[in-house]
Amino acid sequence: MQCIKSGGHRLFEKDPETVRVVSEMLSELQRDGMDAVRRYSRKFDDWSPDSFELDAEQIEKVIATVPDQVRQDTEYCQANVRRFAEAQLRTLLPLEVTIRPGVTLGHKHIPASAVGSYIPGGRYPMFGSAQMSIIPAKVAGVRTVVACTPPVRGEGCYPVTINAMKAAGADRIFIVGGVPALAMMAFGLGDVEPVDILCGAGNKYVTEAKRQLFGRCGIDLLAGPTEIAIIADDAADPALVACDLLGQAEHDPNSGIYLICMSEAFARKTIAEVEKQLAVLPTRDVAAISWRDNGIVHVAETAAEAVELSDAYAPEHLELHVADQDYFFAHLANYGSLFIGEETTVAYGDKSIGTNHILPTSCAARYTGGVWVGKFIKTCTYQRMTPAASREVGEVTERQCVMERMLAHGITARVRVDRYASATG
Image (cartoon, rainbow, N blue to C red; front, side, top):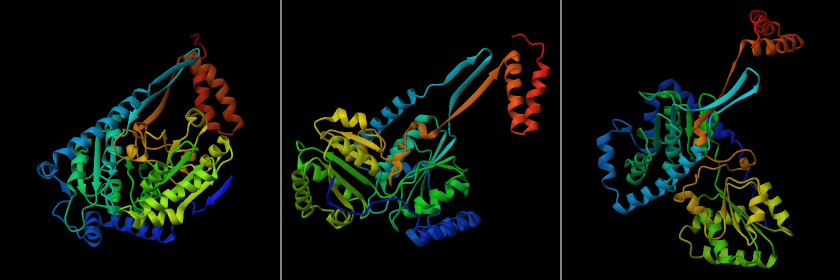
């Protein structure tokens, strides 16, 4: 492996100051409820409406301001997400098996009752994020989805985001952002019932709030700055590869940008293309910092080494610009979402193609995938037995309990052995 360009790696680390600030905010929000939500909303967003929730009439009025083309495009994107989620749901089958005579074990899938969906604002109004948490939850069978999005400072809601939230199936829509929004959904403030799962990306304070609220409710995952890795051989187009690297670099100055090439010549051509495109990129003020500080370029000697490098980085998004796509598809193991061939790109997954864009970052792809319909479903086991089977299993269980010195456990087995002593089947 040859390193052509080095940059900062992005392991997710807790910032003590962020931890302290969020902890204090959550304590105040839990203590003071909606009064604290209002104080923070006024402080951070210059936003203090009579009600943070939009009613049906307000939602209808806001959506009416959204251009027809935007609504049609949103419907197109959401239809793809919904179809894929429905297909995923069909793979989640109940199970029941008799493992020995008279012993039946199984599992069933039970959707969560309530989900809190957070749709971020900030630098970019990422209204497409609405469909990524709301649609899979509703397809899974979640009864209530409470959705929050921050206001445009001092102005109120962003109509396109409200349209996306409503079209995706949100049952209640609130214009409130950041830690207060998550606290409202997790604690159940005002007339909001506590949710079972919090879902959605946000800034470092939102991420830290999710970390601290985990346990009180479930969370989807902890998302840090976005990442892209590209594996490209010499047949790839350096200009296209550079374009896709910069497509993610514009997200955040801390975005992770990683290129794995099969030759130094291709690496140099692509770096030159990145610099050329940066000069005219409309969002170069962010993308240039990301590339400068976090861009990494390696040259792998073999396809196997390229796989090893990529799996060690465990990127959120991984693009393959290679001739032998089947080899990499078969051998790669650590990524949030895989984009195979130059015909697809991360932006398709983020916006329109139907896979989910809430994905693991900061090496979390080593142990988890992204949000999908199964994230909102509990797989719960059950068991049933005949009297004869209970007697047989009880004898073994009692001996195991005695060896562990858990005598009360053993008694629960012994009483069944005695009760079913005469059972024959």
